[in-house]
Amino acid sequence: MRFIKSRDVLAITGLSADQLREWTVRRALIQPDVPAPRQGQQALFGWQSVLLLRLAVVLRSRFHVELQVHRDLLLQARKLLDGRSFPGLWGSTLVILGLERCMLLAPYEALPEEEDAILLRLNSHLEALSQGFGVTEPIAQLPLFPAIGLRRSEAANGEAEPLPVRVEGGRS
Image (cartoon, one colour):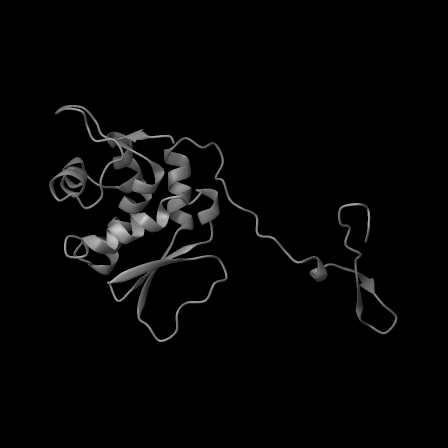
């Protein structure tokens, strides 16, 4: 896993050095992946921690969520991100339900019915992380499309004729 230093986290998240120190050290809302070995040295952060910090900034600034009170929610979100691949999150949404629990929705997955929720779309945050971690191009997963959506041409009766689908072994 690649890590970045605290000063780089400031640029990606928009936090001040005091805010980052407050959130990661004093209040321990979001832990750095590698704490600073001693005073005057920088902590190191992986992409999941930086993503969570960006999402916390949005919760605080746009939705006026008191982060200290909802520390467990941040821990739940971190557990959801652990073990996930960076490209696998493109198109996903972090859903915060009643400020008590959260879940990740994959693209095209439906929201739970009849529950109030805060939706945090991840693409813009993943884009910022791509740039901040020095990835030359954003790593986006291309959506898969069904082969039945392909059409060759209009048939005589006005209906489109499906293209043959080639599968392994040369069969169509």
